[in-house]
Length: 288
Image (cartoon, rainbow, N blue to C red; front, side, top):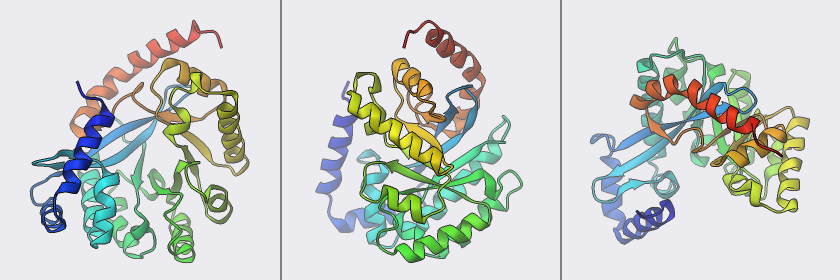
């Protein structure tokens, strides 16, 4: 079976082989054919196993290419001014999905916001229908931005983040540590959550002393700024144990659950307590 990396590389090769016009036509019609799908990945508090929330991840199911990841089609959508339509589709689908979940809804929902959306007041209008629903309030929505999202227009981005923060929205700094503006963003923006990029997390138990020192430093900086830390890409029990011992607040990754469609959330939720007990039992027999 091909690896995830090989599948993604194949999609990129086929994707790039299509001409711009074909891609543009396909993307503009994607909402009509319901090709854009939202998958959800749980975010777990590492100390207790409590489900904090879910990250909503947009995927494009192309009829020829299959699954196209957002890091491929989002930049294209931004370039051709389609990002607001796509963001609207994401918010609408999240709103619909949340209304169908049977389990308790007192959880956070994390939404990835593009650089173009972050510098436009249209984002405020797009958010209004989402938070007007009685099941979703401003305080339950976390808007994830990347380190580079504010670079094109930092003043506008800062003003918009401050305005939304004053209205109760929370902000997460995604892929922390991979860019050049991590500390600048922490100093200048109102950040509630830091998400450590999976490149720092995966196989943490096999990394060097320097790598672990870097993660410790990120945790210390985040705590000093009053931000919680979410580790991305947790895949092994050893990594989970290391992060818990380092006092990392929360995490997400395949060890808990792969991103799943909304229709699978309730079944996973019912099975989660038993899955967590098994993980906790295994951790209790481990030696750090």
